[in-house]
Length: 444
Image (cartoon, rainbow, N blue to C red):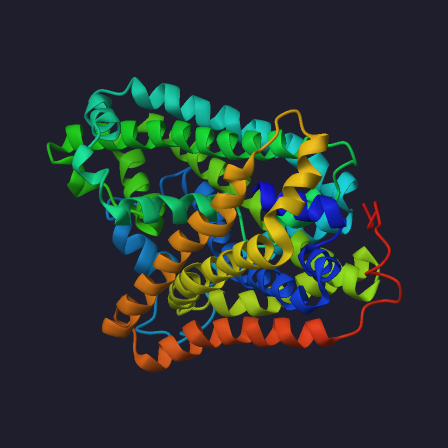
């Protein structure tokens, strides 16, 4: 976080521009995370579309008693495989359209005119909604079953390297590192910004909110397990299943109270998702604006239009398959490898101390040489282990049991597309004087 904050603030540019100003040879590494952000955005809007629809379903609990069948069969109309489209699912398509319009409208109006204003509303609202969910969740009968599970440590896992690697990866993704977002946002910060403290506050605030959410989630899961007389492990699941299958079932057994909880929960998902999707648009758009010198309005409009066209494919019956495969490969290879290369290039070739020497004089708290060690040794070691483990697993068993053809096209194909795109864009000329001139505006 300090590395990306420091890099963006020092060179006052999006990730490609910041890397190019550090060394023109490294510009391509700035484009890769920017392209990855755009790719993530195309399928992230699908998840937000689901959340918008479920926000509406919550009013009548339209998912019924069999929430699993409703989600996969009645709602998203999942096809038999990634090469079977089964047409457009219109409620999903409408949700995607709404999200892209919001993304366009906010980013079209710039950072101060759009992004800052909407975040001042969405983020406090998000916190209030989550606090309400947590307070009510912990007062439900049986909530202690889930809370005991959450707060009872399994000390045998402390020495398990896979646990630490998973935690590292979770925090890495949760903080939006190696996506170009933090470098871009920090480029807008004033000269005398407390970079080190800002990085720590961001990291701890993010983790603190996740911890708060975990209390609410586990409390509600404990209530469900207790009310049905089954073990917590039989209730708990992860990812899509937790949000769109398990929780609707929980809200159903709550009766009229479940309507309120359902609305709050899915409103929470929508608000949180919109702030993230806006960040992804800004990461990619800012890079293009810096490179071409084109107006923000033109770049944002074209980027959102292009992304929207791609997202239409996710609104088909095969959309879930595309999301599943692409998300796995972007996370396992796109983001992790980008972070690994960032740490190596900045740490060893550029010199981690240069970032530290930039952030320390303007920060209340100084970071010592331990930070150099984290960037040069610890982070590359952990990320390298993650990449190797992912490759070994993938070679042994193709992800998700998908066909080799699907993995090559939607998995490795997307990764190669990102790399090729970054190399091509890095060879395109910059607007004259851009690399030498450090701007403090960039169309805010």
